[in-house]
Image (cartoon, rainbow, N blue to C red):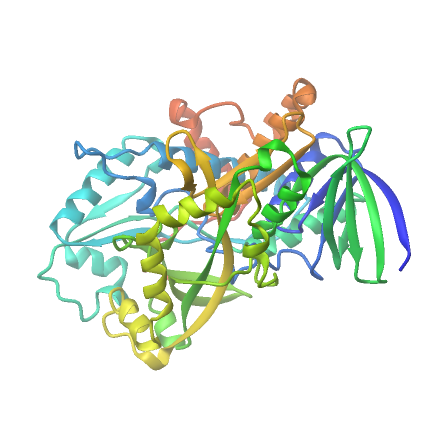
Length: 500
């Protein structure tokens, strides 16, 4: 086996939405930058960014109840919801810039308008949802949201969900028509195709095996080239590890101090997919409910209309599964291999602190198909078993780390950037809201890892993302303009859910 030596300014590991977004931003800011992307699979966006492996909700906190917890005094904390919505607006502005510049075409292929709804049952939950609605709609970011506890109105919005339902129990829903359904796999492919046109070297069937610091402070990446069975060594001034669940093992190989005392726990997602076109045609919204006690935040049950390969699809889930792999195409040794002397006690502490979560996962793993359909019936009362099939979605690796607030072995939910102190290497760990907030997360990496160029780049960043550096919650006068201009660029002509 022969070997090659090559040099780049920037190396991006993983051909998913994160690397595609960071590469696109860097090329906009520095067109002469020499960028190389490595992907072990044969095409773009086939792991965590794939349409079957990603929720595709366009997470903007319009319907996800876990982003608006109830405080001990009964009020609703919308801080996280505001942050996520603001971040999603940055993504929309970024995508709109690329469309308006002619860099990517046919936005309908990756983003469509779709109402986002929350649905709850029981008096306490109805009270919670009403308070949530009242608190959110005080901010213009959530303008247009409707609330109803009238079963007839809810039936107008989601007839399939209300058909055959006992309406004696209190029920309520919120609905907002400015939600979206996003195919991040298609978006990733579009972004990377544009990068290839800009002479970015995208190397598929190339797996990164090791990352080591060189004597001159650069990073050397050891790459297995499966196309011609050669070993390659690439050096770069900056490396981004955006390999989804596979990011943690690669981060550990860097041996930077920030990679210590960090672990990961893999969780599989399973969805029930409707195979009956007549049923699929009766629903046109993303409807989120409340998670059961003991369930992790990312397991909110939802009944989602999705557009996959141009076809309307209906999914319900997620159900939790388990595999020791960190990626669907990973190794059964991934979890065990990630346990090291520096994080062993962190991992053990996490196991001891999350027994309730462990019990929940075990219960989920033991569910039969009929039991899963019973969960579907909580949303579609007359769901028929034969109309639904089980599909395995993506692998997610939840971050485990020692924190000042949570102590040793704290299980983290959400996404987290880990970078070296000198900013020469960064990794993205975690899961939801992930892809929906990619532009914001990648701007954070640029700020942390290229601070010496921010003065030079800031005017261009503001051209791409006009709200950059501003808090939209504090500048409501910008929100309607951003909603309108991005909706026009992305062909988001909103309509009532019933007007299919």
